[in-house]
Every structure is written in C-alpha cells, then in structure tokens.
Length: 237
Ligand code: URA
Image (cartoon, rainbow, N blue to C red; front, side):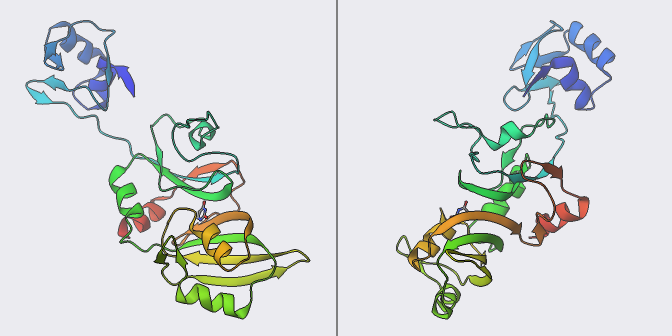
C-alpha cells in the first residue's frame, strides 16, 4: 500500500502529521538510503525502508480479520489470470491489503477467512494443524452406510489416504442427497475428489465452518469482522 510519507510517519507514531511534515522538510527522514524533503513523496509501506534518527520506522500494522461468505463464481487468489472476479472485489470498505486464508474453489461457496496477519495465515494453513472444516454438499445419488465408513477410514485420493472424515446424511431428494462433511485437511479439491471416489459426485458445495467458527446467518456475498474472542480462538490453534 502506498501512502504519503508524512502519513506513514504519523501512523508509525513518530510525530503528528504536521510535525512529520516539518521533519521531512528539515531533511531528517530518509527513504531507501536517500534524504527526502519533498512532502508529496509516497512510500510503499511493505517495500520501502524509511529511516528517522537512523532507525527503521515501522508502521504499526493494523491487523484485520474478516469472515466472508464467498459466493460461487469468485476466485480466492488476489489476481486471476483469466480476469475472473476475485473475493477481494467483494470487500468494498476494507482498506488494508488482506489475503484469503487457504482457498475455496471457484464453484464452491461459503466461509472464507481473510487477514493481513501473515503469521496467523501460516499457522492456519500449515498441513500439520488439523483444523476441522465443515461442508454442506449436495451429492448425486445417496451415499450408503459403507460410504460413511469409507470416509471414516480415509479414502485414497491423489495417491495418499485422507485423514478420517465424517459424512452424515441430512436430507434425501429424488436425485440428490444433502450431506454434512467434516474433513481435517485442506487438500486441493479434497471434498470433490472424496465424493467422486465413492461415486457420488458433488453437485453443490458450501463450507459452513472452520474449527468452531461457523457462517450462521451471514448472507452470501457479505462479510464481517471477527470478534476478539474469535481471533483469540484462531490464534490458540
Ligand atoms: N474441497 C473441495 O473440493 N473444494 C473446496 O473448495 C473446498 C474443499
């Protein structure tokens, strides 16, 4: 994110914006090794190195934690090579540069966390942490008791067995069955591949929970900030 140098200094707690302007004009501030006296100078808060009194100035980062109900038809990458809409396009009034925690397929809807807290993202997406993810899916046909046992035992996808997973029947219709699925990993298209493996492919997929955080009544396309309690919970994982 690019900001004016005086704003950067003010937000880092060096001085008020007015006072920061004076410091700049007096030649007391360096950007990337050069003294800058121009007030309009912009700095990239991630890349540029700003020095004041020979010390690096760090912007106090404002960490934000967001829960989004992702609609189908959005990618969870920040930029898409095919110019498809990205989940970032949905965050209308968020000025921080946030990133999705993990991913959801283009055609999957549901709970997606986004944050600019890189440490938390790293922890939550690390394969050694088995954080339960809960999905509701509409499957073709009706899974059998044996399929439920297969999920519990693990299913080989992409040459590797999955961790034990839960499959629970919620509602049967003529052609489809609505199920709840809980997995512990986040492998690529894992739910779709597991359902394909038991020959009940996914028609519709929605993530409703990550750990103990659930979408509840958050409407599709809407988002909200996590509460302090929810943030502490995620950090405790
Ligand atoms: N499993 C899938 O197959 N797709 C997702 O988006 C998430 C989990």
